[in-house]
Length: 152
Image (cartoon, rainbow, N blue to C red; front, side):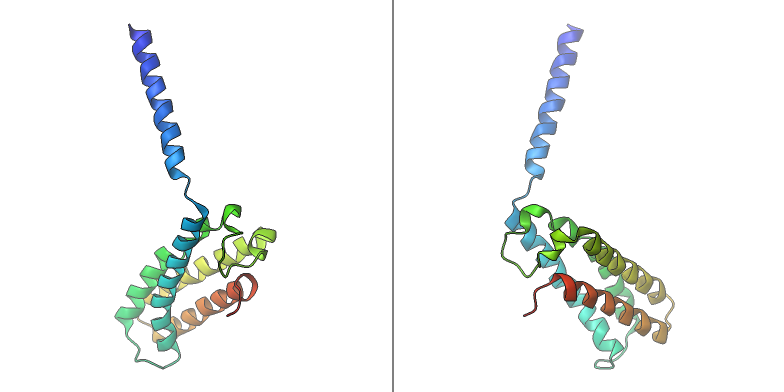
């Protein structure tokens, strides 16, 4: 009896694992839409910061702190949306993402680090330091867009 119960439990666990794996396999077009959605949100929250750094809108320390926190979470989200299965889906992603994966990974890590540095200074209220950190994030965005994103 115990052997049957053990075998039934093992079979159930294995079956659940297989079902979970099948559900985890997202279609390539969905991955592209998800990564684009994340990047749209990055643009939304970074756009305000960039405008503040350039003096186009008034500086607001609370907005810097809030948007930096959002960017911190968003900065880690899109990268799993670039598996090789997505390279043939129409998007602005350049083939270099898949032909130069180490360079792409370095660019994404530079972006994440710059955002984390921005988060650290956003808590201090030092406007000049925040604007400098915003500029550093902007450079990492440009570095990735220049090498891995089709121009419009």
